[in-house]
Image (cartoon, rainbow, N blue to C red; front, side, top):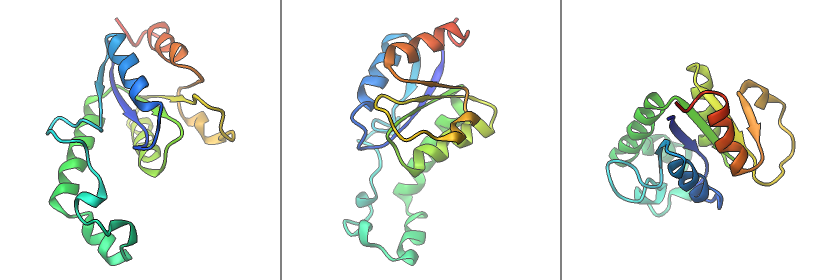
Length: 147
């Protein structure tokens, strides 16, 4: 079975169903909303309730905060551990950076688009694009990712 890093957004309503379906199919899944170090994942407001209004200097300083460092290390460890990334749309900068890192590391990336988005040419960098959970699970099996 695959070790999967699910890259998405906190606001993505499809994320919990993807994690559940991949776990049910027997894969090991890193869930950033429930990191291995405990808690409910990282939010910038854990550092400062005013984080959405930070200046650039405050933002740059926030990257070095111990809570940010801890979550970054957990995510980076998971990226190294995983053999597959599932990018669940819609999502933002972090998820796309994670998927790009995985592709650059020679790892498999599958883009899951549960609701149609504007086409993106650069998704050709990734291994596959699917539009429903059944297709996602099947492509993991079909392409020899599961044993």
